[in-house]
Image (cartoon, rainbow, N blue to C red):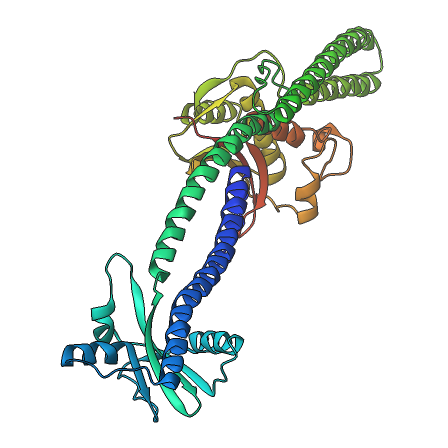
Length: 448
């Protein structure tokens, strides 16, 4: 499975980008602070060690070291300073500190003390327990400098604040996340919420004339976009209304002369010629009805209703059976959809007529699929090629290329069914069935 790290939503992208950049900034800050604290610790502990080494060298050269007065003074001096001609033993468990040794060597060179070698070790916890102060966590170290063939071993302390630094940065990062991400999430949500409403409105069927204008809210850029969309949708609604009025006028003006022509044709004496003329007039009338239905699919004043598909399909099948058509019902699942009954019936009739005309018979079934209701019209015909499946849903496209309505009509049935299904929030799919035959599927959202 491919891991998708980059979110798709506006809120997700803003939060992700800010979180990543804040993490990178805090990582850089951690590195810089760690280096600064390390330099500070070296300056503190190394400076103290250098001062003690210089003092020991000068006093050793002057012979100012007096003998200890008692054993306690001797033990205290041994803990702070050791001067010998041989390298002192390294305590068991001590950790070498090359950075501290290099720093001390550099400071001694700056004081014109010729150092042959410098070593530094951090003492194990048991060794430095006596030197630790709880309010100032530190690390006890021992620095050994070889000068003029003699070894000067002194003790010092360096800060051990790594854990404190990590804890501080963790709390700082969490505070910054809280202070930055919460306002960013609020701003992104304020911009994304009207954009989601705008997306839903843009996906809605433009033929639904009763859509309310979207409320202009959010940042000024988003408000301007919503205002432009409302104006654009208003122009589309006006254009569709003008188209409906024009088509209504065309339909009325054409039907009137066709009806008059039909009456005059009845007076033709030649029976064969009269029948052909009547058939042509009926074909023109039917084609005109189909064109008007295609143009008006999804429009009109019919209100959406909650439709039980079991009842709708049952009535449709019973109507076909009464007319002697080979139409039957298969499995019918209990499902309700929100649609306009007359338009949905017209879409189902168009698909059923195609199944009976081209596929010998029609079988209607309903099934639930992931919150969607699928009305399936199956036939036992030869099926369709992939090219035909892509093209037959377009207006005036036909599998049978003659323009005779007796063998297939004007090629508008599938287009009308598709437009009606899309107008109800669904879609139309044509699919060849394994073993032969075709399934025409109208997919609609289930209404609880």
